[in-house]
Image 1 (cartoon, rainbow, N blue to C red):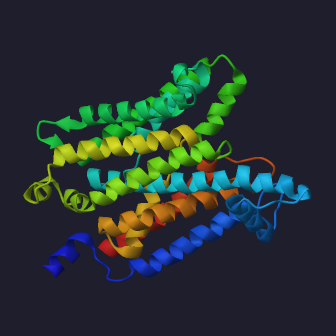
Image 2: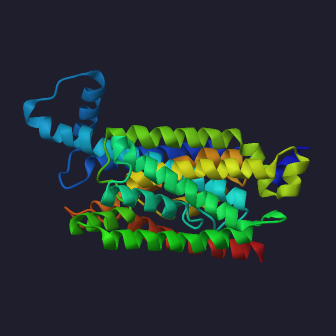
Image 3: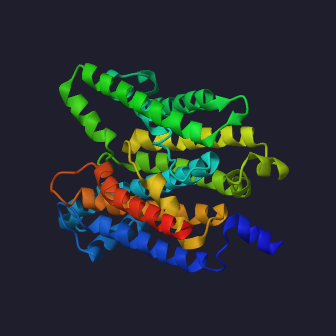
Length: 353
């Protein structure tokens, strides 16, 4: 029985614990670097002192107040938002790849992020859902992601059910369609400055992160990760095919729809805050599988930490390469993600051969 379970999940013994420790250490290190580096360099000791003063209610010398505000009110929310967004995108990637049974799938390939971008762009440029106030942007992005998901599922359905390849193809095609809609909205925008800001935001940015975004993205990422972990055994079964899932008591169609909608919700909220950031949900699940095997419980424990560290590190690069300007974080993740993904695919090909 143990052998069968290992064959199904890719069990790698006790490797998870040391890998998790190293990953958490890496996350803490890049988080600290994120507090220190920037247009105004701040010594690590001072940054930690400001954090302690904020947590303990201690006092800060008047001359240090500007640096204190930079660390506590600007860089710390940015680091925490980036970590939460990276974790959420990583988990969404794991779930979607398991549901579609395709290692090339992620929220962007299936058009979920493009749908969320349409909703968010409509709010930014035209004030859609203005009655919802500060919740208009995440609500519109969530609705856009859900609508995109439902359209993809509807068009990909066949009399025999959902076919993974057809789902990916439909998602890719509709993703281009939603991107075209976003482009038209930007072209029709009444204000040129707003259009330029949306184009930058669509490539991903954490520049606007604040404590509201920390709570919003953090809650969504934690909830999504927790629900995915609860369904880890079902994901193992679903990844083996609908027939295997049915034999293990999993209603494949219902479970797949639930997972898709959950992933759409997580991605929609993250896109509304951070913009469209690619390759996190595509590459990081593969890295996790290489490190701890293919069992979804292990992958879902490790991937959020890897995703968080990766996105925080990418944001550090984005805001330090050309100071005082911020590069789009999506450009940084693509610069790292494309060669990493090519190497992963080449390694996979050699392993199969």
